[in-house]
Image 1: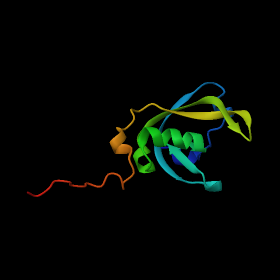
Image 2 (image 1 turned 90 degrees about the vertical axis):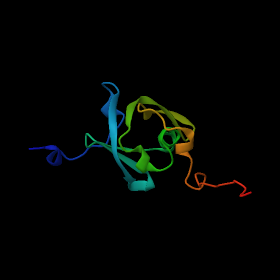
Image 3 (image 1 turned 120 degrees about the horizontal axis):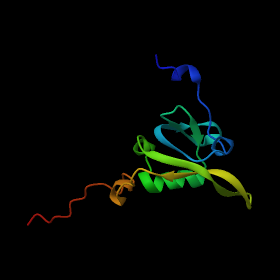
Image 4 (image 1 turned 180 degrees about the horizontal axis):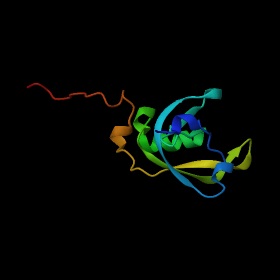
Length: 119
């Protein structure tokens, strides 16, 4: 019997990573409290993404969070500036290969425009 459903989920925090970084596979992304995206990992744990971490994932996997699913990321302790003050923070590093730039472009850029002249 898979016992994961009985364990609940925990949010990954600075304290969670005191013993070292960890790799996680993104299972889903949804809007959480305070209008921040929350990544849920295959482990069942969750992580609230700040603007810096969100930008990192957009640069690696594209603007659509559906494209993030199945990718492996590393979560480690780093620093982030908040209110002009450096604070210890959880930082995301993409592990799975980044998508080509063309695949990361927004849909309006990907329109298949055919500029062939028909003569």
